[in-house]
Image (cartoon, rainbow over the protein chains, first blue to last red):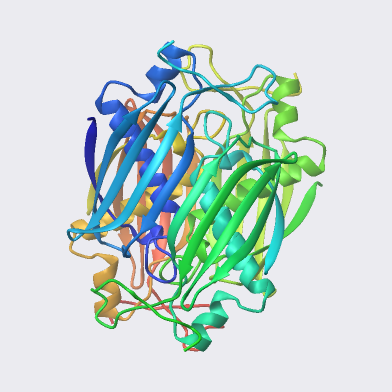
Length: 130
Length: 130
Length: 130
Length: 130
């Protein structure tokens, strides 16, 4: 299935006073990796929005384990792949490796959504293959 | 068990071009809520670090469901509670409500850690009750 | 002129490995303070967008001096005021105090803008008082 | 003098509901560019900290003009250079180009600092060449 790999260097400003990556940054990296994965398949979110009348691909579920730390200036390898395609949703798996050891193991599920015209109800999922 | 509630107003800069909260911000809010919860019990991280020779309380596990959106200027209620205490770890549960409806349901587990003196091995968990 | 004051507690995750506030966070706080200032005058950005056909109030100029540090758990007072109103722009001044001493002194200028229909040219400033 | 260039693609999550870059992200990019510039000269902050007994190189002054917008998926060129070296400080200039047009023009001054042993007084500047 569709996969991609990205290498990132942990920056000073991405770490907290303990000297390790401030946790929410992982979720920024996951998001960047999903966008990069889609783009590598010619499916950028901009294209999806323009062609399929969706407004986003929000995460509905994260199951994320942090197995070890990453510190300022560590070089991390992020491996991201699609693990399942559903009618209006897809499953993604991320593995982050630090010096060859897996430090983060994260599964996420995203759905395609369209904004409700009244903007008040929860957004409905919308299937881009319709 | 120990619980606290915080109300936050979703800010312009916390939202993405879809107009909803950019996902990693939830994990910043979870972190703030955990710190506030500990502080409300007289257990600020600064105190824990000073008294128990730990260097942090990193998350080792998130199981997070996003059930509905939150948009710019929405008022959110974040309810955070300790659900279990282990020897060197604790479980936390967050519920985020938007206009009375639960939009985020997140469980996390944190451990107390001490930095390995060599700074190369994964950090060992350290129990502050030792 | 219009002013407001906000107190914030510096959070763990807002600090870098040096233990001081990671610099870009100040610009998030400036933005929050400008929005709070406008809201206190009944001029939320949402209202401005809806009533005056603008799409934002971007900063065009920052002149910012950092005079001292702010550290994790410091209580900061942010004083924000409008210092000048122009036809389609306004000047803002922020002072951040830590234990009574000014640690940040920042002037900014914002303009009201409308998106160019072609989305390619630079955005034109648009005066909400037209 | 020392210069470097970096190209970045504006990500979805770096933009706000207006569809343009959320302003504080520029200051993250400036910081990354300064670190990259130093690293390209063999002067990583880690090296500076270890060899010269400093704890950081905080910004003391920004003079930043935003001349045009950058939007989601724009490719930006960030040119960063040292413009002056002082005894314990240095001046940096950043230019950000979007499709060949300068959209951000920023000068900053940084100092080398050492933490005051009492941790209460403002940090003193410390010259790494001493």
